[in-house]
Structure formats: structure tokens, C-alpha cells
Amino acid sequence: MSTLELLVVLLLVLVALLAMGGLAYLAYRHPKLATPLLVAGTFAAALVGVVAVIVAR
Image 1 (cartoon, one colour):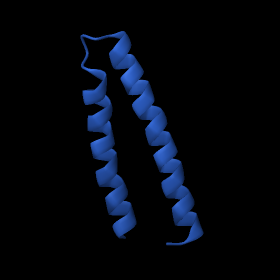
Image 2: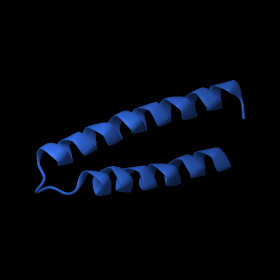
Image 3: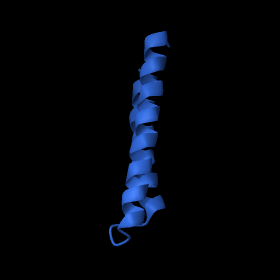
């Protein structure tokens, strides 16, 4: 992988962590939406699939 690809993956991971934290906080503040770990975990699982496709190229 080139340096640019590694930086893009790092940026994607940082944005994903920020989004997971936001989703977990939202679910925590509004428990009727879902449990925090389920929401953040589902987002993380989807993100892993996207990152796997990007890295496999």
C-alpha cells in the first residue's frame, strides 16, 4: 500500500470512531432508539466491510 492509501485508511478509521461515538451517545441519551453497543457495533461491522473492500484492491 502506498502512503496515500494508508493515510486515507487512517482518516476513515478516525471518522468511523467519531461516528461510532456519536451514535453511541445518541442511543444513550435516547434509549428508546436502541442500545448503544448495538448501534455502534452495527456501524463498526459495516465499516469493516467497506475497509476490507478498499484494502483488498
